[in-house]
Length: 364
Image (tube, rainbow, N blue to C red):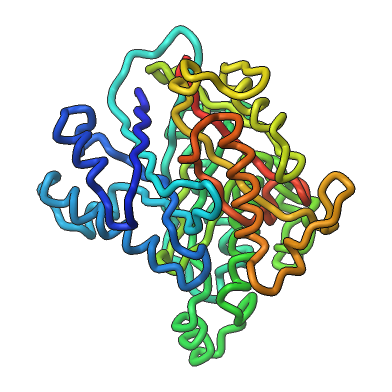
């Protein structure tokens, strides 16, 4: 198989003109689209409706082109949105296509996609969520033909959080929840999905996992997971990216671990892992080789970065995730010369505390 990566700008959450232009020009066959990952200019919280708005807008564009319904488009294409384009982050979408291709002489980008069953409210942020994500990760590995987990560089998972409606429904049934705070449920949901990736890839042992460790035992983690939670989903969508000898095309993916929110060396390490060595910022020619960058942003648990205090965790006006996304987005863009990058907040069980994963797809 051959994976295609096409990044488009978005003037608003319902702006699908970039994809329409690619389709009209013959650069993208609608039937080949398998996933969309993007950033919308919402708040990134439990009430961020820009994510569902963006999904619906793409479904309405693609449904008549595919001769199907918007709901069917949602079933055949994985839509993953992260709200919050603070600072220099630019609203955009990355379109992934998959078509038959001749295997290259060296491993190339492969993409596996799996969707879990719908989760009940009481399963969100609990071991049930861990286990369904782990199973989906294993199915993704089989989909890509990757047998060595070290060839996996990025696993994006989008799943549900606890909305007020789901909390009310669960109360009526007498179900016990991980939390009854909608925004606070993001921590448990992201953490459970992160541990699901770790379990599926063998980075943690199932014997070490239980409801009690989720969002608490942060020494248990995946180094390649990137998880987000939203009210627009009831199941989890898992997208696994790695390099496979059975894949074709001219793209490779690599990853690194960011030591903190200003780790420019970590950005360069991710590019180098994918095959693009840069000593400082990326020049114009090399910038064209970078197809996409995906990262998680986190505030330091000590409230300090490199010995200096910051107010990310104590600011009552701005959520720490928004601080972190803005800071890291500027650092990545300063290296890549491109602010259309995917930076998502919250790293529960995604790298060690205070650290964060970053992945880059590069044309070789």
